[in-house]
Amino acid sequence: MKCAKLESQLPTGYQLYSQVYHLFYTRHKDTLFLERIYSPLWRNVLEVGVGQGRLVPFFLEHGVENFTGIDISSEMLERIPAEYQRTGQTRFVHGDFLEYDTNQKFDLILYAYNSFNYILSQEDAYRHLQQCCRYLKPDGTIFLDLTFPNCLRNGIGSKSRLQAEENGRAYEIVIEHGYDMQQQQEQRLFTCDVYDCASEPRQKVDTVQWISNRRFYTIENILSLARSLGLSPTNMEMYLSEDGKYYDGFFIILKRNAY
Ligand SMILES: C[S@@+](CC[C@H](N)C(=O)[O-])C[C@H]1O[C@@H](n2cnc3c(N)ncnc32)[C@H](O)[C@@H]1O
Image (cartoon, rainbow, N blue to C red):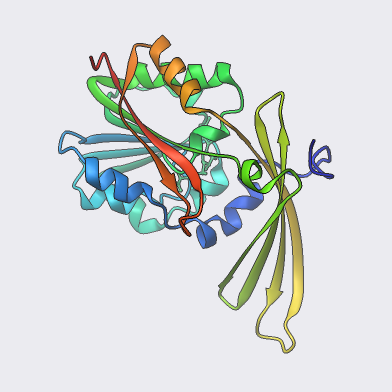
């Protein structure tokens, strides 16, 4: 079963999502996990789906030599703060990772904050990991962070709400959750009302809607894909939601021929 409007022509991807992404997704448990397992060997880092550069300060603080971020969405890349772009250590590339071509090799390749879930078929997931193997140094590390779909715990058709304010504007988002069993895809319909807080009472100035699709990968899915490419898990951890009430996703570290 799908959300009512999921068949409509609403924009998908990050054209609109990018406008509010930084208001809601600035903090995540991945930095705590990466801190715990951090290796001084991670000198050349590639983030696939770098978004608005949330993890750039983390890696700069750890003194990486080169940080390359690639993203398919120009709207997300445009919102990377200028100070992250000015350092000699960073480079940002616009494009699909599956078409990325470079002579560089990396010590760490990461898909943070469920970027891997935006790969919507098992075939493409395989091709992504294959690309990683192509650009990974022999002793390199792959980090994946995968989410569990919201509707698995709250049900198809369930709604969640987010609120934030910035520059005199309030953003109120309702997210309706759908799930396509056959495709193993979660579909989220975002409706964002924007209010001008300066007026009394505050005025609604805009409503925007977009759809975001993510594919659900089980731990077994990932392990079997990885195995078929000669990658083995060296660390794996499920993590809890902010309120500690449910498992939100899992982190997994893969290495080539680890055993
Ligand atoms: C959930 S956001 C994560 C952003 C960032 N990694 C973070 O941790 O905040 C997922 C990002 O992956 C990007 N993306 C999805 N598929 C991609 C692909 N094939 N190649 C490059 N980027 C991709 C999207 O445009 C989006 O910016």
